[in-house]
Length: 173
Image (cartoon, rainbow, N blue to C red):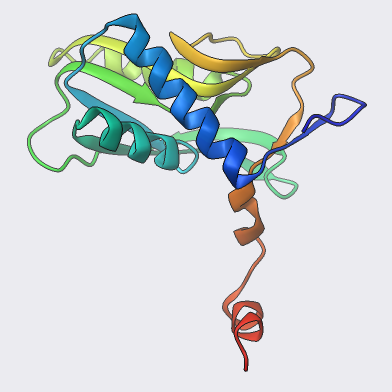
């Protein structure tokens, strides 16, 4: 649910899963055949996992991080992992790059540039749930465009500040 001021988007688990399924349908409707999926950790892990299962394709993981300041709300320096984790072999052929959103677009743009420099990748396309209006990169597939570029409150964020002691209290009898 988008707030009246357009600055915050609150997403439930049910909405989140429906958005991932709609993303899968957009990729399917394009008719593009791909060999592997590469998701960006952490935000792209859940969408990547679902797409990997729906399309029955191997899932690779690349860790990136750019949100560091003020509780993760201000973008800092972009860090990209040197290595990509694959179940077997190398990242090659036609690759679908998956993340949760194109926020500023800086991360996706940098990762796409790096992947396009890899000779084993013959074709690369990208897929996200949301594209913010401020993004400098537009993925090949996306579900929603957010012109006001709100902060997206995703359902799993409840775990960002949940520590084991608080979790123990939840389950005390």
